[in-house]
Image (cartoon, rainbow, N blue to C red; front, side):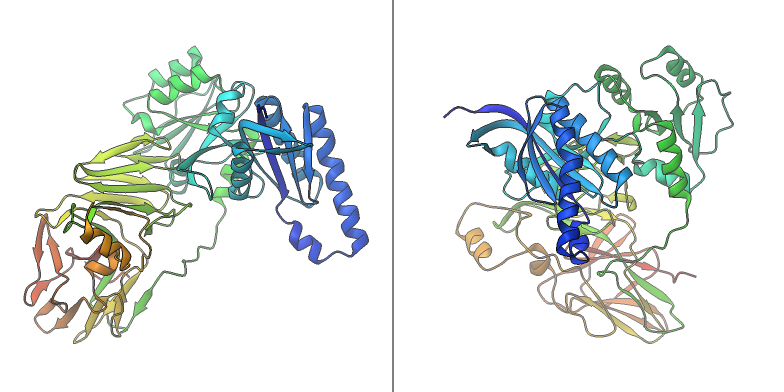
Length: 509
């Protein structure tokens, strides 16, 4: 049985289920007919063939990757503009077996998984599709690397950009919100630049002399602060611009204007279900603030050879997530950070999805949640700390004692509950095997239910270790000291226990 190389396309209507719940049978039949009427001609016009129609979704195959992506863009533009539905599309290219009109193979599975991951209104496709399509004909950008069910390893995923959309990278969003964004159109005089500007060039042809001239006319600016807004970009010009350390905003002028306008609108921010904001006294003197991830040294007790933690967009660290924006790997070689989405920077240098960098101390990571500092600490217990304040905090008033741990007494600050062993690389041997079988995790092994306490007395704040096997440390400056007896502390210190960093702060106004 022979196979052929095909690009597989899965589509579905994002709000189909809700519409079905409000429709009678006649309306449902009409809905399905309208959906097929919108999809079938587009697929056929781009030399594709519909393999399956499930009412709210289609599976189609194309002989050319470029045709498949062009058809997907047209579908999303038409469906979103003409009806009440929002379509998502997933594509993958590879070997396919066609049997009795159906199609099977790894590309089919990958396209289905990518479609399930894509947000409503977006077109996501695989790295093989990118390599096979004509990249100059289509507007596209990287999305990130994702763990997809049933797919070995992490899949690198890209996004096709319809003419009506522009997805703003996080550095652009942050610069807009802090009044540091400068827009320079072709023909404009060079404006006055604010401190630490982020500059977007608009209306310039990629790789043109006009673009290079305006770049050369700028004062000394961080290369990562320069962004080009363009829609369809020849691969050679894209590569040259990115290699210079600059960024790209993919979109047409009207789409960029609309995206910037929508970002300026006030929004209501809500905290996640894991956020803890407690104030046990109206006269708090100090606050304990969850402030990051502590990285224990490895190898560890012939059990753990190395480990990783995933960074989410909201700043939380978890064992493993298919929604991660970055990953920290700890090994005997050191601490390595890997970007999983575009827009993340380390010390001002942009990292593309899949790019890694070893951290040696005092680096600043710019992530969607804000700035995360990597701090090297003295001693052999930890490789370093990933420090960034969160909304999880506990206020402490005079005479109070506040506990820290996995299950602290009230009032207390609970440490993150990171379950699972997917992030651990085990040592070889019986000791590691027993630990794995017993459910060992770093977070449970290195911190107790009642780990430490901070007491606020007349003479100041004191840290007390409550656990006889799991140590607690205090970082003052760059020194990491284990808490043996009661130890004084105050604003600016960090408490390290297990894999958690807790900052001692003065209360926020």
